[in-house]
Image (cartoon, rainbow, N blue to C red; front, side, top):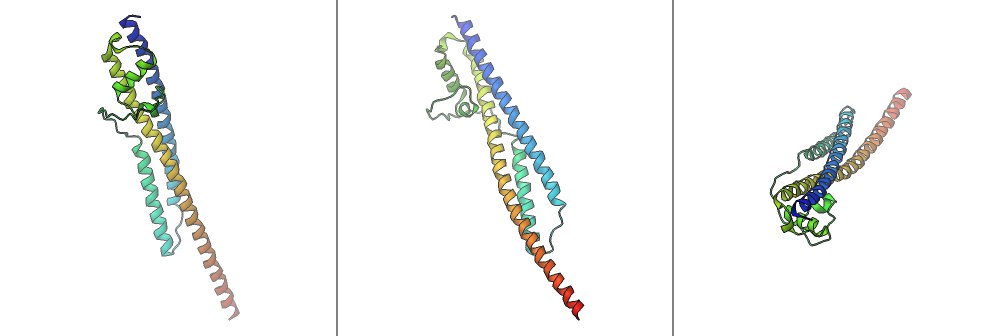
Length: 195
């Protein structure tokens, strides 16, 4: 193959990888949007719940609501990933899957392009390298964004589990505290009736 055909071949491969990673990034964006909407709906419901008059319940509920706001803020951060066009050498000599954004984001664009060329047994001097470097840079940066969004979604799920447990404990405590108060009220009413 000549220089032009090799360049077209690698460009086509890189373009397919780019499209795949772009779709993964869009999918993670949708997931983060859904979890954000769900959390805002839950927060709206929680703010409408009457709070027990007990001081400990009020403080605990306030702390839980603040944690929930922090959780929502961290979800919002996933919509604004770091997208500097600055490259760092991050590769650890592991085997790299040239199609997986989790592996790609570990590389700089030059190293990534070298690995793709090695997999296809094509030498750099058989190519028009500049356009391929630009596209490989886009692939690496998009991979970093997709990785950030997936990590953010995973962390959001963990925080949501934690907040669910904390709110469950709070509502259980509040329920039993109300039950205790209710029993005392019944005892007082019975005592008043006896007198």
